[in-house]
Amino acid sequence: MNQLLNQLKSQDKKMWRISRNFRLLYWVMIPVYTFLLVLFPSDDVLLVERLGGLCFVLSFVVFAVLFSKKAREFKTIDYSQPSVQMLESAVKRYRLWKPELAWALFAILFLDAGMVLMRIPRTESDSLLMVILKVQYVLVPLIAGGFVVGIIWWYLKHKPLRDYALQLLKALKE
Amino acid sequence: MINKEEQFKQIVKDNEERVRRICRYYSNCNEDSKDMYQEILINIWKSLDSYRGEAAISTWIYRIAINTSLSMSGKAFKQLKFRVDMDMQHLGSLIDDNGVEQKKLMEKQLDRMQTQINQLTIIDKALISLMLEGLSSKEIANIVGLTEPNVRVKIHRIKESLRKSFGSGDLEQGQTSENELL
Image 1: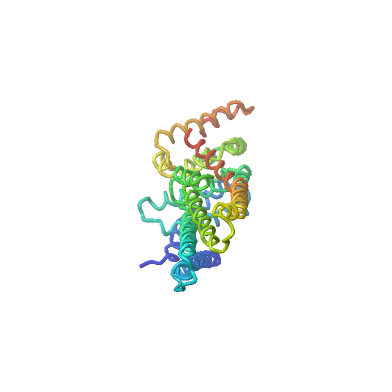
Image 2 (image 1 turned 90 degrees about the vertical axis):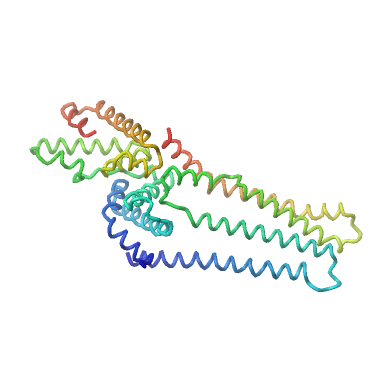
């Protein structure tokens, strides 16, 4: 019993440390990036670059909030709820499309816009359309790759759990 | 002010037998039973922060125990066995007053009963385990999150299905007693 208690306490401590470090990281990084990319006092930095920096920071904020929400959601799985409620939460937690994904897409759009805006002053010979296309040439395969990996991950790890929870719910309710 | 560790120890101390009994329902060997017991303790620890005393502690413990068993993977579930111990409160009394032959017959019937219960779905097993714990339909409904009439209908269906399975068996002599078990 004491051994188990020690393990549980150390796990709690570890979770608390990870969550604290993560919060610390984004609360430090956000102002730092805001200063370096948006507010840095220099005449060499153009307004368009500052706007690009702002887009990066906004994207960073959205991702930080999303990850922190996700970590909290998985940490607070409550086994003391009635079974039906617990299973319904599991179905919701393990579905493929979640509202958070829309926010993630929003953050990616900010990232995309940031990359385009930061690139404009450095590519004088290219038209705006060319700059946008060049950024998409790099970003789109990366995002598409990320989505494919995410879907495969969901299919292998989360879909079976969701299917199982649905199956149990059906058996309980029928 | 009692801290989390002391509260946990107290809950485990007060409910150890209850949790071990639930584990024994599902595990056919000591090792599995120990693993499940440990898993339930972990989930009690994790859920302790959210315990506000709204439900009776026994209901709270049963919820965690049942939900822990439901959370295991589908594959592991199929391997879970439902054990009906010979000395269980609600079944043991059936053996007490009879002679050796009658006891042997009862043992055989209990063995068949265990086999039949093992054929049930995991949800039915969960409901039966709570019923064998002596809980009322209302308490079971509170644990699983269904309405009381719904629980009653489900338990009735399970009993019917077990009765049918027993009825189609070849132990004609013990059929009446078997049905009495249900």
